[in-house]
Image (cartoon, rainbow, N blue to C red):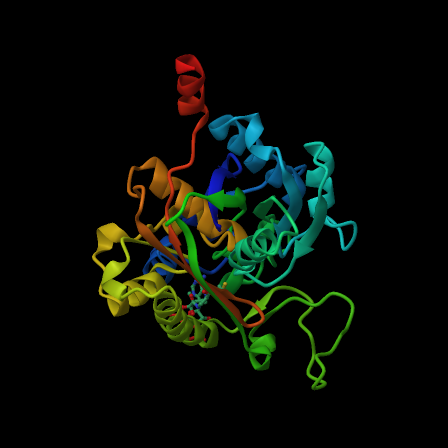
Length: 337
Ligand code: COA
């Protein structure tokens, strides 16, 4: 038995904030932001929208697309987030309660690769018999923790969520490999403190979101390539076997560098960082959903996921896509029965 994605749903807040809006209160420009990052606009959560509420909406979208039954047998809920509603309880418990699931629930913190880590934990839990199905969510209210006076970070991030049900798929389909990595020597390159004012080496922990953009950029370009190749090899495939690339959406230049090194044509990569900015753990599920909706991914395609972020961490995975039933074709099947 192998596992794959049985259902997917996403959400992005209504409010769109363009680069031009930053020009009124920061020394920046639409031209600078677009040329350095590819970002044109991002979504901003409403005052009463948090990671939990956005996670709920992604799951509601998933139900809308695939039908209520898809949540049956979900024994575990994982919410990957860097912006949980509270230190405790876990945001995942709020999701469990909202949908009346009889399931274990925990939050997962691994920087932007959180959802990449969550699908790996989901796969492993199902394979080990700990759960029949797992609800793996990425949800972020990053704009609520931004320092809006810091032009080097405020312009980069956005809010959103994505939810996937991971469970058994037919023979030949599903996850073929996972690569999870970390390098804590780069912990100070992208950080926001909470309780401890210092790192273990005595250096100060930043009080608000801090990022050494240049260092993170170099790390990202390096690790996107190495972890992608490792995941492809582990899957027993060659780079030319990859039919579609769903990268973490942090910066269009980083995605472009990865695409070129993998020798993939632009039409085999999904890029939406221009419309959402970096939504961290939500970025890959949102990109995957858009690529599916655009008809870019077909049954049997080998898909490559690669993501990187605070920790420093990275995750890569190869998935052979199985077309899961949608609410529409479930109804059609019901009609035929
Ligand atoms: N508007 C205008 N100028 C800005 C700016 C903004 N929004 N943000 C930073 N700058 C300035 C810097 O202060 C710097 O000025 P200085 O040379 O006087 O010090 C200058 O622009 C150039 O900075 P630099 O860091 O060389 O730019 P860059 O081409 O590397 O782009 C990033 C900056 C942040 C876009 C880029 O480094 C990046 O994307 N890094 C990775 C970020 C990432 O992926 N993070 C998410 C991890 S999950």
